[in-house]
Image (cartoon, rainbow, N blue to C red; front, side, top):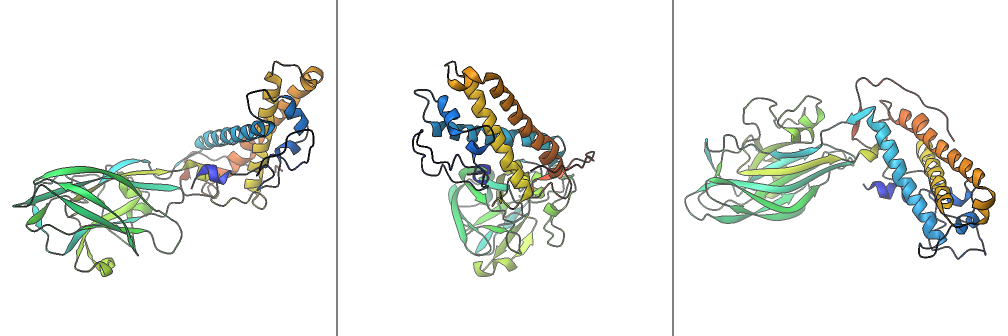
Length: 382
């Protein structure tokens, strides 16, 4: 989900017919909240038009810029405020799924038509799980160096394929076109992915393992208690907060769900990057700026900030116009009021409300309350 998409048309620019300004462009009257920037009390199109400068675009460009900057300011301020009372539910970062610390200990015969790995991911709304590289680790008497093709399947279909380099008796990394794995919360079952290859004759896998027994957290495949559902610290196995993994092999791809899980990864190691979009704490996939009281306040918040941006621009204009000449103090007071209303909605309603334990993941699955955060307050605004 894009946080830009969830703020799209959060407020409209104007729905007011006005013959004294140029015609509105298509979409200027689209508002998902029913709010319009030029209908903010104390603001109107002729005032904004007076500040339009040659070479800086049109009135409508000015309104659109003020709205875009207000969205960014609101996201940044709200994100910073929430970060004081919440923290990430899962640690973002990069990790290797598969361990090579005992890679030379044993070699494993590849006796099935298909070998590889299986991953089951957590359902994380706002989560990103991207495979950026894969390593091979094989021994062979003949036929190497070579390449193998790894096919990636989900529960239903072939997703994509990647070609990996293979060099005998060493871990060989191939940087690949990144593969984004869905962590969708939709559906009953968690997403699963199989990374499979067909062994070359005479090839054996080196001793790449899910759990090397080297100390620290010991990841395992456990469908009744998956690692990603546990709050236990997973030192050295960051990836186990996001998925569980195992080696697999079988005769028939159609029944891959039934393949046996093993600690050996069959000569594959995955490099993955994990992150969660913190803006999902306040940014809904399908925002309802009319019916959802929180989203409605966010829409009002953005409009106040956009109004403050417009007046700031008008005051900063060195050219004399009827508004700056006759109502300079009034404009400054109006800007101060808009700015105050913007900050009040963030600091006195949105941030305290969305920091509550039962609201921190109102729209996503990325955050959790800090242990020492106990302030719970929600004021009625708008």
